[in-house]
Amino acid sequence: MNKLPTDEQLIEEIQGGSQAAMEVLVRRYYKQIYAYMYRKTSSSHTAYDLTQDVFVKMVNGIPAYSSKGSFSGWLFTISVNRCRDYYRSAAYRQASNSTAYDEQHDSKQEESVAYIFEKKETRQRLKQAIGTLPDIQSEAILLKYYHDLKIREIADITGANESTVKARLKQGVDKLKKLLRREDYEQTQHT
Image (tube, rainbow, N blue to C red; front, side):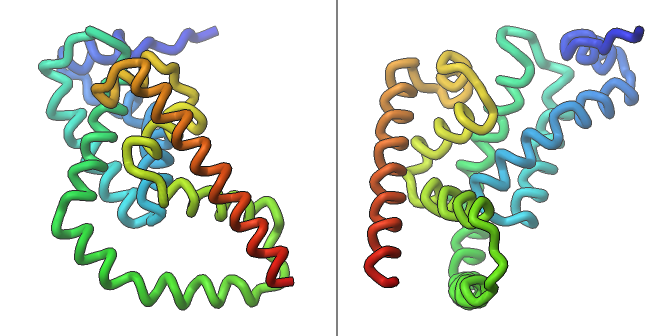
């Protein structure tokens, strides 16, 4: 039975010049990073581009990488920072202005489709609700509940202390509950 190499073993091989180890490491984390980016941006194209940026930064940073914490924590730190940079960029402002009409049109079209599954609709509502939260709260919620990271890891990734992360999680979850309850109430009023 072959034992999979640890992240640290792969990093040592990469620092020694192994391209194959780099490919294994990228494959190991690609889906997680892409999923985080997609949940943050709600755009597959943007998530793809940002994920590529993260792995380029990883490749460039590996030679100087030192294992002070977990490799996945380091990679998520790069991801969170790349996402923050994207939301401050002119590219984001331009994309958000040009897609406002498209999103409005798409949502009307989606409502007319009778066979939307309840589960998919609930996921969509939750995704939209998370998108309305302040970045610091949505980051914490995505890292905790979608990527199953511990409070300490989230604190390291976001540069906040553990009590701040706990507060962000609580505030974010409370806001989500209110938003979803309000949507449920509004839907019952319209039927």
